[in-house]
Image (cartoon, helix red, strand yellow):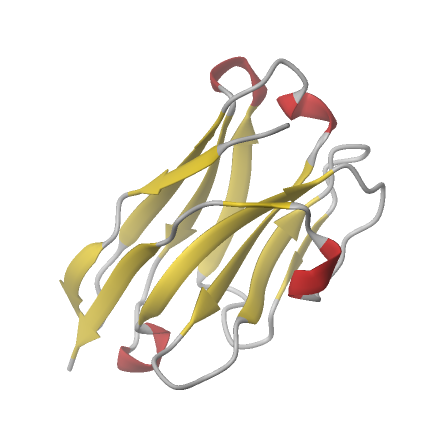
Length: 124
């Protein structure tokens, strides 16, 4: 069982930066593939980024590639999402997700554990 708690969301102007954090409970955090998803109002939840636990492979959605960076600190049981050059279209509730899978997955249904989400609003 893993419990996830996101933090770090807020209101930022276009071009600004935010760092989201996701703190996980449990002693086996290092053996979970961690991902970030987002859901804008009225839209489906979409994949943002993932880091596998096996080889720390990272994959990003095309819409955030080059602007967002996912990373993890296993000693702190925390995964981060550094978001730079933010755009109004990045506005959404951001969720972290965890799964014991070996390979990255881009479908929300592939993840067993979810946080409650944190709101990110980017003003133009």
